[in-house]
Length: 404
Image 1 (tube, one colour):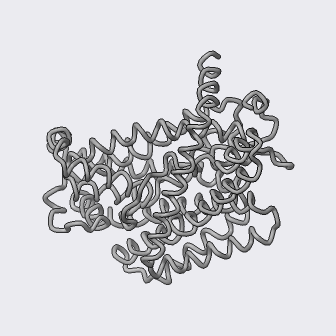
Image 2 (cartoon, rainbow, N blue to C red):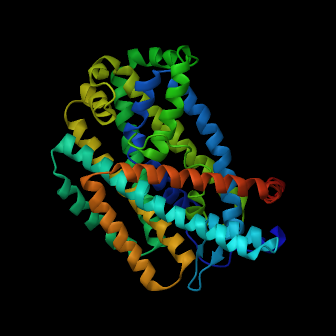
Image 3 (spheres, rainbow, N blue to C red):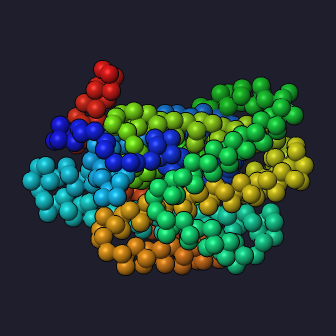
C-alpha cells in the first residue's frame, strides 16, 4: 500500500513551516502560559523534569502520526492538500478489504474530533480567555465573547490555507514575545536561576513531583489552563496534528514528521520551561495564591517587571487562545468535510463554533469537561492502535528519508 502512496506532491500546499505553526496553534493554547503552574503547585520544582520526560515521548508519537497523514492525504481540485487521521484509518482498512469497518471507524473518529474541537478546542479555551480577561482587565464575559466572535468567524470562512497564513506570523510573534518577557524576568532575578535549576533535579524523584509533572504536562498541552480534570492523554498521539501537517507541500513524510518533533520542542521544552523557571524564581511572591494558575503566573511576572506585565500577559492569553480556537475550528471543519462535502454542513459547523464561543465565554459546564475528556481519550486509543498497525509504513518512510 505504501508504494501506491509514494508519488510527488503536485498540488500547491502550504509550506512545511506554515503547517507546523498551524499545528502549534492547536497545542500552545492558554495553558502553556498558565497550565505549567499546576505542575509546580502539585509537585513542586521536580515536576518540571517529568514534563520534559513526557515531552520526549510526545515527540516520538507526533513524528509517527504525521508520516501516515502525509502518505494518505488527498489533493484538492483547486490545488493544495488535505488529510487527517480519518483518511489513513479508512485507507488501512480498505487495503485489507474491510470496507464497512474502515468507513465506520473513520467516521467515528471524525465525529469524535469534531466534538473535541467544539468542547476542548472552543468552549474550554474561550472560558480560559474569558476568566483571564475578567481577572486581569475586568472585562465582562460578554465583551470577551463579542471580541472572539469578531476575530474567529471571518477566518473560518476562508479555509485552511488562510488560517495557516495567519498562524505563520501570529505563533512566532506571540511565542517570541513571551520568551523575551520570560528572559527579562530571569535576567533580573539571575541570582535565583541556578537554585531553580538545582531544585528541579533535587525534587524530581519525590512521588508528588512525578504526579505533578504528569498532570502539569497534560493540563498545559490538552487542557490549556488546568480546567479539564482527569484527562487521559495529551494531544501527541491523539490524531489531531495530522490534519494540519497533511496540508504541507512536501515529498517526504518523514521530513514533515521532524517538524512535529520541533513542534513539541517549542511547545513544552521552550515555552513551558520558560514559564516554569519564572514561577520558580518567584516562589515567595506566588506562595499565597495557592492553586490559582492564572494569577500565580501573572503575579510571577508582575512582581518582577511591574503591573504593565499583567497587560502584556492578558494580550498573550488572548493571542494564544485565539490561535488555538482557530486551529481547532479548522480541525473540526476538515472532519465535517470528511463526513460530508455538502456546503450546508460547513456553515452549520461554523454556526456551532459561534454558539460554543458564547457558551465558553460565560461558563464551561461540568458536562463539557466530561465530554472533552471522553473524546480525546477515545481519539488517542483509536489513533495509537492505528499507528501500531501502520508501523511498517512509518518505518519504511523513515528509512527512505535517512537513505536520501
